Length: 599
Image 1 (cartoon, helix red, strand yellow):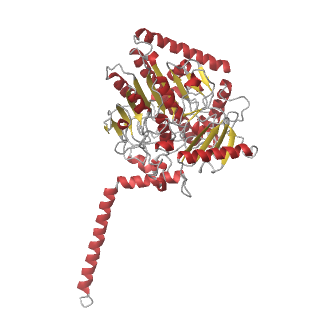
Image 2 (cartoon, one colour):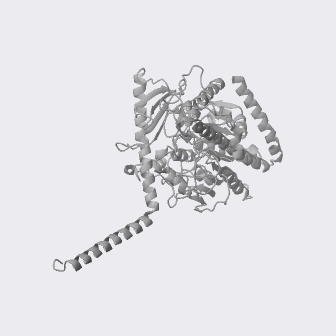
Image 3 (cartoon, one colour):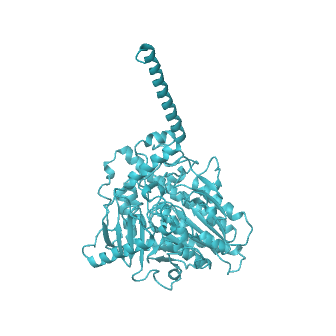
């Protein structure tokens, strides 16, 4: 199978080559011109979701970029969207940015504390801030979710133009909320409320708007474009013509899909031969235990999931073609990655959700799944399946939550590379600053970067960016990990985890099967000390006793719903009190008439 993987990359290189010459003929700029940069963030994509990594979805455009540049196979991020986005755009640990978690799961005891303000705090510069100062035009289209108070939107953090969704997600077919935490879908353009088209599909809309921003200026300045897709976040939705291309592909169920992905990872060399395979978690439903009707629904959910990825790739291809038509493809750096692992949540079967769905025009029907009005999701079993070769998924610090794909291609990045050296989300900003010739010096009053440039590894000067003893820590809502050399300690909190620390060799055991904490107590102790140092230095705060993420989400959602209807509730309460008062007054008057002597 290894030769199949290599031949696939060769074919992708040839496909890319067919696109590049036309662009090269059009380009008249001197070779020394600073490169344009397109940073593409996929939402909740698993490590193997792209075709180049062995996924089922057809992603020819991402695969072409992977073949013409570098695939990172040991790249990690945080297990949750906002902290990852903060680190991606700043090159700093999430706690140092102020965005250590998301408001949906934040306990009130931590609200507003340093690192937990859930906004980019003073002194935190984004890559847009830095590149704008270096003469770049800075453009954004997509999900923001990094603070929504006065001064918190992209136009206040270095972006010249932006169409930004200030929420964890939204419907892909209409400007409406996808969960009870939100009243609507808060879209903003350049800081002002935006009116979206009456009919759209999110991936197409976001690419259209970025193309518009690229074209609207005749400036010779290079541009930085941040394209943050909604794919494949809940609601999982895609045009039917894309979803239908995967009809029947997932009928064998989640156990078979996880095994097939694992086998492809081993065959391609991403997973070392002999690594222990991990089946689905013990509390997973077996595929055959479902009714035939539910099997049909869940199989269709994965068809839509794959269709959503392919639709996104299709629109990435449109962007590439447009940049090529401008004569700039050869001088554009592309980075494509994911904010965390796959989403396990099942919103449809939450208490009272059927009422909310009915009130907001959603259904979970087999017919029309993924189309307008469908609240699609894949759930924990499919999330466990597609997280192969890792374990668990989004929210948790196991490999399925942290290890994601990352592709980088363009000038300064030699073609046909695959790097197994450890890298982290905070490394993207310093790497792009290096490639842009913008430098990573810390301006006066700014907080320093914590990531490091991967350029020496990409250029072949070194085989890894992190040397012996270098540690990388991560923490979100108690889910924590520390990497050092080939070691990783991890702690996953309830309900999926038990809050205990474990030690793994994350290279030999990517599924995190063999806990080595007892067999290697000295290493385990040293790693725990390393994590404590990271937590103290980064400002990680302890969670309140009894904290449980799913319970906190429900509490916060209820509080938000009450706030949305506060005026109506006050009015109802006022009317109720008035009615009680009138009733009491009427009863008192009646009593006086019947018993005047007593009165």
